[in-house]
Amino acid sequence: MAGDLDKIDLKILKAMQEDASRSAAEIAEVVGLSQSPCWRRIQRLKDEGYISKIVAVLNPEKLNLRTQIFVQVKVSRADQVNLQEFSAAIRNFPEVMECHVILGAFDFLLRIVAQDIHAYEKFFFEKLSRVPGIQEVNSYVAISEIKATTALPLKI
Image (tube, rainbow, N blue to C red):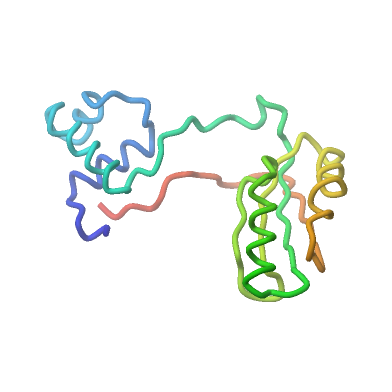
């Protein structure tokens, strides 16, 4: 639990959210520790699941993935079986960056990336619309991004 973390742990997590490619020595310098204790804390944070993985955040513009679409999906029956079947199908689509179960008029909210609107149209007709049990789909194309972050708001 977050209550088990002290200020140094939170500073390490904050520093790693900013740039996890830094060495333990560099992070130690930022948080005010020597290298060995810092490295041990990082290992503990990994072992305890506070750090679930370390990845590279890629630039979608450079990779020609300039279109971001938010999609609301309503399934025909919102029972456990339908929700699980839809979830399993969605996990196989690399275009789907995020999928959330939501409350309200729709059951799922997806964030999808594509090269352009034509690529999304192809994804929609060849993949998404073929998932059994979908009743309704509403798509919203983002025209610009105001804020995007992977950093959680840590209270230090």
